Amino acid sequence: MKKNSVKVVTGAQWGDEGKGKVTHFMSKGADAVARFAGGCNAGHTIIFGGKTYKLHHLPSGIFKEECVNILGNGMVIDPLILNDELTSIRDGGFNSFNLQISDRAHIIMPYHRFIDSLKEQSKTGVKLGTTGRGIGPVYMDKAARTGIRASDLKNKELLSEKIKYHLKEKAHLLEGSNISIENILEKLTPAAEKIIPLITDDSVTLYELFQQEKNILLEGAQGALLDIDFGTYPFVTSSTSISGGASPGTGLPPWSIGTVVGIVKAYTTRVGTGPFPTELKDKTGEFLLTKGAEFGTTTGRPRRCGWLDLPLLKFSARINGLTSIALTKLDILTGLQTVKIAVDYKLDGKLVKNFPSDTAELERCQPVYHDFDGWEEDLSKIKEKQSLPNQAKKYIEFIEEYLKVPVSLISVGGDHDETIITDKKEILF
Ligand code: IMP
Image (cartoon, rainbow, N blue to C red):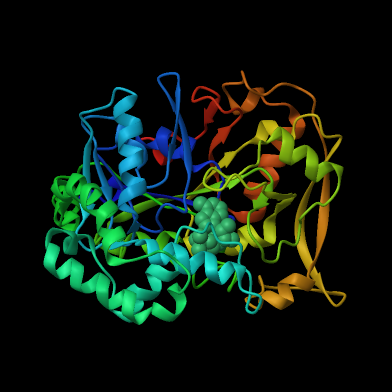
């Protein structure tokens, strides 16, 4: 079995690194693309055939007829939203996609969404700024071993029983909502009927493809710093979003993975609450927000913006085992007189050796910056790294040297063509 036939691509910061474009690029030569974590909290914008698609569940290979697209067992799926996505791509003229949904994936119900928003509105407790898609509550049911899985959709009676159990168990939280077994089933039944034919044991499909040495792309969602274990807990999502989650989230063996590409935005953004050492609450922050169109695909919320943070990325590169970096949105930095990169943190006047696991400590960290001269040139038409302005090249080389991880792709614009590949072996199959 060819080891390098399985690649993982994952966000290396707090999500929204530009995964849509990079995964679409990487999926070109893929025989299968599988998502392994999260659900419709993710939002990928893909521009294809002159149309813009906002995908929440669907993997990036969905527009390629011959590619098997998989929603892996590590995912949580909202059948109503998934159906809307399928309708939108069918309306765009794509009817013959190949999609499989893991029978082990968990199903998001209206009560999960309700409880998610209830927690966010609560006057007590930590406000996480979730996407409100029911992600935390559905993973809670999974961990409690009471969850409803995709395979349960096939058995109407059992499904009804399970939903009734949850409505009873959660009755104290659902007071004041209009959620009932009748109105859940009224919407769920037609949606479920459409997706039931797609439900299968995807771990078998993937293993067979792996045995046949087919090219498999495992597509992450969110980002390393939102990982349930290694992210800035509790300001995280509820799944394993680091590269290691690709194995339990699909059933492929850990040793099958040959390449791990981390997507790094040339600056940093985050949505929702939580520590953000290099955040800019000034004109430069506004510049990045506006020029980078930093608004959430799923919620439309403005993203918090700041300088690139290398202590954070060093941690992310270690935890993800990055073999290379896809650097996105470099063009957004054009026009800044000075560009800064955080190279250290100081806590109570002392340099911090390792990225803090304690969120309160991270809140108090002060970044130490390295300054670079900016550049004015338009990068979007540049096809080779050598042709980039010297200052931009220095910026990239500084990142590579600090992290000891090479950059394999540089994105210099929103369009598919506005991309420089510096290591084909990493990015293309
Ligand atoms: P949840 O995943 O909706 O529970 O949200 C938990 C945290 O993760 C919040 O801060 C969200 O803003 C953040 N988050 C979840 N999904 C994404 C994403 O795809 N991009 C960026 N942030 C995300």
